[in-house]
Image (spheres, one colour):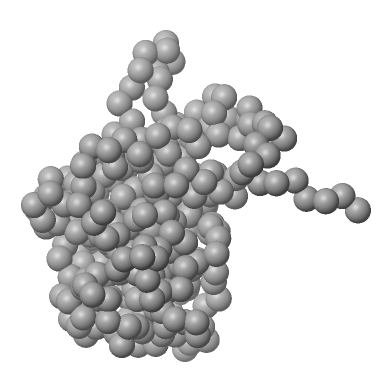
Length: 295
């Protein structure tokens, strides 16, 4: 299989506060489907900041990078290129997020006491770190065997939207999306570094449908790769006719990929339909989560 990639903001100097951003009925996520320089932190920071600036200028609310952008997911993974969460590389993205008043989901090989992690940080419009997700389903017998796996799926609020992350291989386990749904996620970001095919696309369709969540997925470009895509959970019109859950899909070329999510429609769907949590029977799922002993 092709390789794929909580949270406290660090102290920092005060910056001018950007204009007040109100929760909105739509959210525009832009995928950065570009090649990253390999194992070159200065180059990935410079290129990444330029991408954020361009995407924000084109109207993005949040910019999503492919998996492990800091190294371009260079193989074999060189642990010497792990960078600290409170270091200059992350600070560079926090600065551009605050300057452009835009959200950024940046990905990196991050330093960790037990060994580096494959990490996504969701950064808010003020440059604050809202969420840290360490990839849970690492490729333990392959490219990521020396990385430390994450231990859970958390969410954060961005522009009034509850957001979570599944990193690449995480998306292939239905429990990942189910955990995020149960945590209240409305939108799940999926950074990838993998060859793409219809099976993986259908996985994302299923995760969106069964959990009533929107999904934004971004990948590196290239022949057999690319195809960054977004999905809505809304699969029937008011008359019961089936709808295509695909919002947009890119081809394989390097490009910014804009996705627009209609939150009013998605939230109405979540309120009145039967999937997600409304009809679950967790008492019957004994093999998934064994019951805890009673006191």
